[in-house]
Image (tube, rainbow, N blue to C red):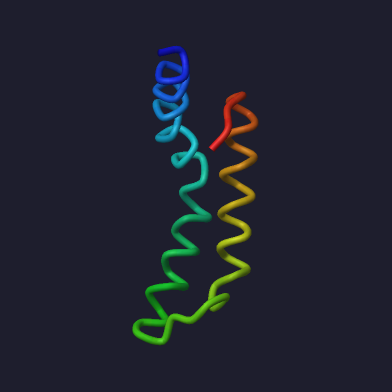
Length: 66
């Protein structure tokens, strides 16, 4: 049951992690929405990498992992 409690603790921090990356998530979402039905692999790779890096950094600051 220890694994379950650790997972719950980690998941409880997700809203905080995502809140810290709202700017990057908005930029990524805007990029995807602008492409409409033309979305292809790596279409918004730059925005996604920035969003991913922000999430990882925020998780590290909160001493957790994603």
